Length: 83
Image (cartoon, rainbow, N blue to C red; front, side, top):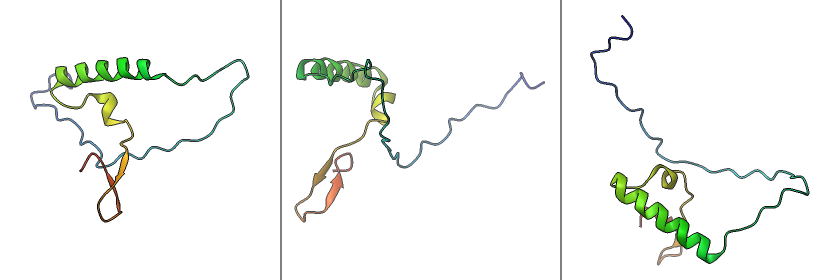
């Protein structure tokens, strides 16, 4: 019976790298995109920190969040997640 699985289920492997592609789209004039202010960003970050603590690592949201690029001493860009 297909419903009687006795073997443990395994999780699919996480991709080694996630590439984010942003494609410009046109929006109707009535749809406004308003950037979050510093206070809203701080509240969001605190919420994510709570999620990180609950799951014992990066929450799912952070796994898809673009990581900032920082320059190293030899001026080669490096992903801050590996620094």
